[in-house]
Image (tube, rainbow, N blue to C red; front, side, top):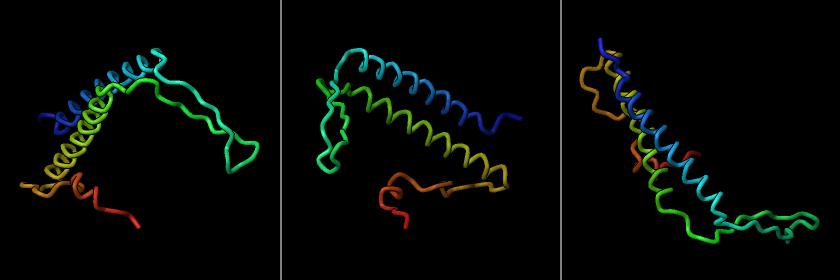
Length: 111
């Protein structure tokens, strides 16, 4: 019998590749000194300071794309696993997604 979670495993493997790529981009950013540290007094709390990092160059657009791909692969892995579980539990045609789609998540607010 084939592994019902094979598709989920592939998506997780791909997400790990994106995580590795993200790590490389972060290291390049940090080592490239593309930011400066700023320490300012906290105007609301005397004696406290606020530590900030201000960008001196724009972030690479690749970072956003990598994060989006990583998140999508993990979401797909969950979708595929949910489908495999539904089939294993005896449903022959699971048509309802195992959890809300991104559009539903955007409008759903927990109490």
